[in-house]
Image 1 (cartoon, rainbow, N blue to C red):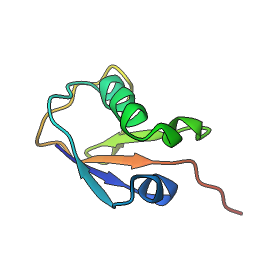
Image 2 (cartoon, one colour):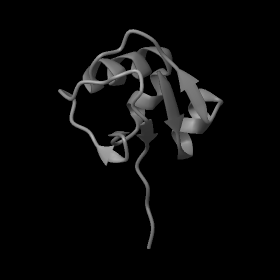
Image 3 (cartoon, rainbow, N blue to C red):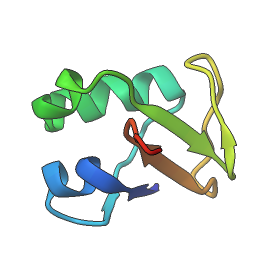
Image 4 (cartoon, rainbow, N blue to C red):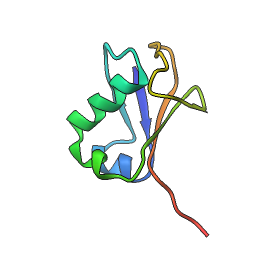
Length: 76
């Protein structure tokens, strides 16, 4: 599974793209990310998008899905 990282999430992971295997839900992906990159858990919110749509923790993931990890953003 290919996971795209943006903003500070990319900085924390040290790469714009990471891979994972055997993850079947958004909740499991979130748990895996927090285990592998503990600093991500300190972010106020971390959105997961699947196929360009924000996903809920219960959503099921497929290996072919486009997954993006989007940290909180601010602007004005």
